[in-house]
Image 1 (cartoon, rainbow, N blue to C red):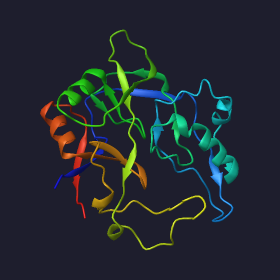
Image 2 (image 1 turned 90 degrees about the vertical axis):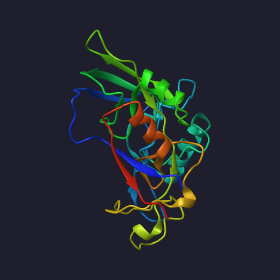
Image 3 (image 1 turned 30 degrees about the vertical axis):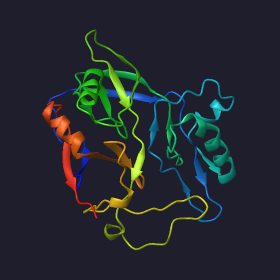
Image 4 (image 1 turned 60 degrees about the vertical axis):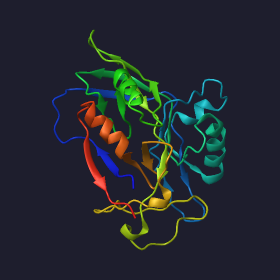
Amino acid sequence: MTKFYRLRTPRTSRYTGNVSARRKWGALPGLRCPECTATWAGGFSAYPSVDLSSLPERGEYEKPRPEPFDQFARLRECVRPLVPPGGQLLPGASLGPLVGTATGSFSPLFLHYFGAILIRREALEQLKSEGVQGLRGFPTEVRFRQKNHPELLELEILAHGRLHPDCTPERPPPCSKCGRDSFTFPDDPILNAASLPTHTDLFRLSDFETIFIATERFVDAVQRLKLDEVDIHELPVR
């Protein structure tokens, strides 16, 4: 059976890289659900490939705010044709490349920017040459303040796998209207084997989009190529 690993930001770093950026096109708004009465925006998937320049409604994604469910659903469906097939579009999902500034030195894989993984172009090419599947890197619009700097791409990482029910608390079912299913990430996570993808070696958890999961093939390639600056921890699968 394939092993799976959680990727995390290392606690210490010999690199000094820092990014100050926002999304070019903003994000889906939050929503106010008429059924469960929750107001929320828990989507952390990022779609750097999205270009809203030809979308008449593009200005409606610029300002973070909650919207009534029907308005949220309208804006979600406007962008759905522009995201990768199967892309999860929860309230708060961000759209477009990162725009901003960067300073310092960067590791080949950079996990210090919340909710995203940045990668040097040469590192992405090396991983692909090692047979790692499903990696798609997109240019950032991040300007460096120094002359000699790497070319940073952002990996577009879709949500696929889920946690196994055995490691999550008993709770009411998700809201049938908005799908909200709020619970704390478990101390001892277990992955649900039936939900794990076979076509990609890197993905987010569908029920916790800030959690990055990699296959054994991805981890072996990272270690073989010495692409440091990643905390790697194996997770059980059931």
